[in-house]
Amino acid sequence: LKDIQFIYSDYYNKLEVARFDSNVGKFVGYTTFGVKNAETWNKDTSQIAALRAQRETYCMNNIGVD
Image (cartoon, rainbow, N blue to C red; front, side, top):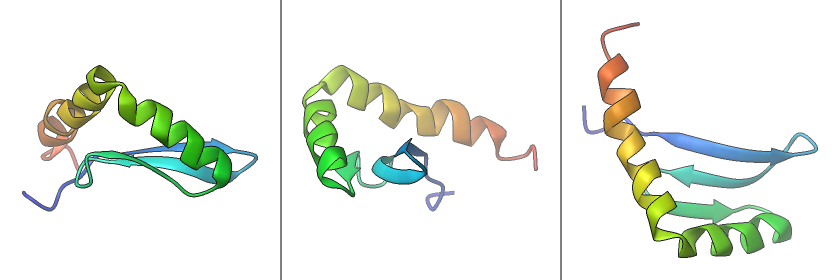
């Protein structure tokens, strides 16, 4: 169960610009626009804590569904 992860991706014009991965624990930008957004989003500790908690609240509760 430790290999389960929560991923939130942000897209613009069908291109992934930034991603939050619960294993990394922060946003990572893939374009210049995404890097700037990721730096801003990573400063908001309450948002990071809420996204980290999504792994337990969303992923772990739905393990037996599939």
